[in-house]
Length: 156
Image (tube, rainbow, N blue to C red; front, side, top):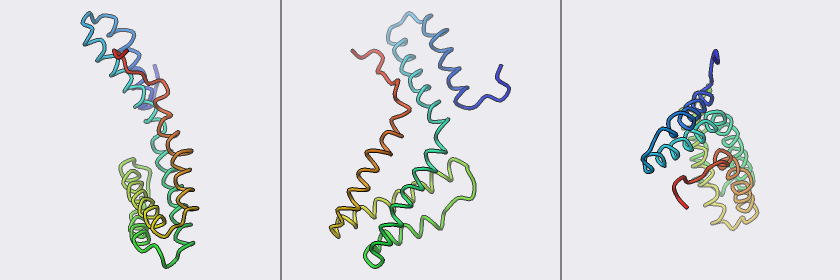
C-alpha cells in the first residue's frame, strides 16, 4: 500500500493491472489491441503527471528569457512581441496550479512565436537560429521523454 500515491503511481498501477490482469483475459484481438493502446497512453500520462509542472515552468522561463533578450536587442523593433509579452507578464500566476501555469505558458509561447516572426522579418538570423536550436535541442526532447516506450500495438 502506498499511503499517499502520486498521480503517476496511480496511473502506473492502473497500467500494470491492465497488462497483468485484464489483457490476458481478453480473447478478442481487437479489444486486446485497444487495451494495449490504452496502457501505452497511461504510461505516457504517468510520465507527464510526474513532470508536467516542472516542464511547463522551465519551458516558460526559457521562452521568457529568449523574448526578453530579443526585446533588449531590438527595443523599438518588435511591437507585436512587446505587446504580447507585456500582456503575458501581466497574467503571471502566483501559484503552481497546472491550469494557471499552462495558461501563462501559452501566453508566453504566443510572445515567443511573435518574436520569431518579427525577428525573421527583420532579418535577425542569429536570434531565429537560437530559437530553432532551443526548440530542437531542448523542447522536443523534453516532449518526447514520455514516449520513450511508445509502441503502436496491433500495427506491424
